[in-house]
Figure 1 (cartoon, rainbow, N blue to C red):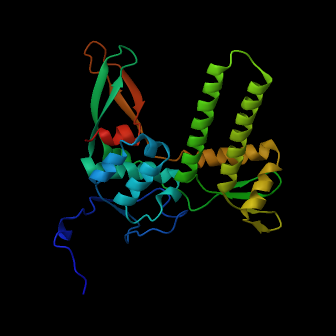
Figure 2 (figure 1 turned 120 degrees about the vertical axis):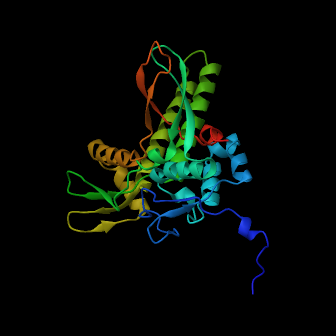
Figure 3 (figure 1 turned 180 degrees about the vertical axis):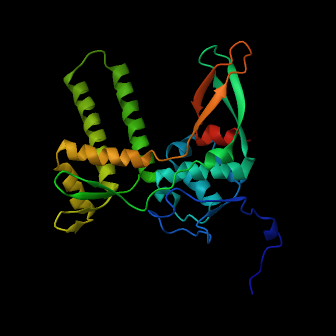
Length: 282
């Protein structure tokens, strides 16, 4: 017989259930309900502290920890396709602070600051469901099967870009003229980013099927393939991957200026940045 805590009945309980865009197709280790939905709970005090930690936000640890805490059905949030992340963060925001959120946007015509309230559930309902598989057929007859970036891959790319940009900015401040050593640093930086791009693309490929029906899913062979095909073929794969990665919640909101003498209407985009996004509901 287990000794259940006298306080356990007061613990967090699911506030809503949500179906994620990937539906577990690329990360099947999930505990879903019979309807294929995931239970979402409100954030704890510890979770809220993490949204204020710049380092944890930059390296992705904050988002991974918050999703793991609030959506226990997901074992490893870092392996989630990036198309799922915004859906889950929005669901967690609703579970923690309610359906409505106030956003601020300056009118592009008269510069008046407008603060409007939007319904988060309406935006959450725009999440696009992914197909269980995506493929690109190249001119050679080879078919490449791809999947969206994982959250870990997106964070890796963002960190690399941040580090390289910071290094180049420092070099620009310290260097008043173009020297051989400065050019060497620039070249190394661009080569590093090019290698990162190819590596991410390779890791987004699940398998490659030849016209003869032979399949290859070895990561090393896939990377070698990408490094030895022409730029047109690589661009085909990259464009399809970008298309998949962009399948997300519709974050655009239409706003009418509250200035009576203006009444201009424009479109702004909801920024699901964990720092500002969750702070908006506190």
